[in-house]
Structures are given as C-alpha cells and as structure tokens.
Length: 149
Image (cartoon, rainbow, N blue to C red; front, side):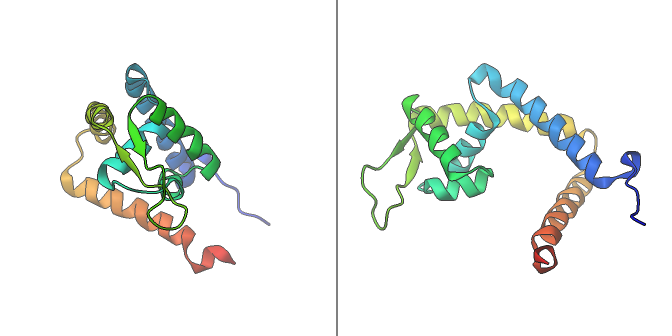
C-alpha cells in the first residue's frame, strides 16, 4: 500500500507554495520595469558572468534553448544586451549587457532583493544560511545518482 501524502505536512508542497509566492512577488516588482522573472534572471546571470552563450544562459535560467533565444532577442531589441556577430570559437555567441542593461539590472536587483528580504522576514543570518544550504542539499539529492534509477 502506498503511503499517502498529506499536504499540510509535505515539505515538497510547502516548497512549491514558497516558489509560487516568490515568483508572484517578483513579477509584481519587475512589472514596472517591463521585465519578466526569466528576463531578470538572464540579466542577472550576464551581470555576474559576462560572455555566457545562449545555451549556458538557458541552463542557468532553467528554460529551453528555444525559449532563451526568444528572451535574448527581446532583450537585444530593447538595447539591454549585445551579442557578437561571430563566435570566437565554435558556434556559441557570447552575450554581454549594454550600459542600459546594466542600469536596468541594478534597479531590478534592488527590487528583487526587497522581495527576498520580505520573504525571509526576521530570520537571522545563520537561519538564512541554513535554509539556503538545506534547499541546495534537497536539489543535490534529486540530481544525484539515485535520482537516475
């Protein structure tokens, strides 16, 4: 007999609730900047790691390569990023933020940081580190060898 999942005690369900609430709050803060959560995540990655390819960005933002192409095209049309016309090696075109992209990223990062502060409330720095480490361990456990079987 399969064990029943009780939503009121399910860690997975609570995690899904937190993820949905976080996304909704981020969307509300990013909407006045005309950014989606995915566009923001793309800008944030490029701000921290200039020159990433679209495939690397897709993996980092958790979208398909096809979806990332549309995101990059939209951001490039807005003048927020630039892409080389030719690849320095292979086929991957490195992507970088423009000055306008860097400016918008700064405003968006401040907005998202405010959402995270609200989410974490009055938790101590040690509690925040523990939460982050616990969530990373959960993700690693599902990505490990046992997850393949």
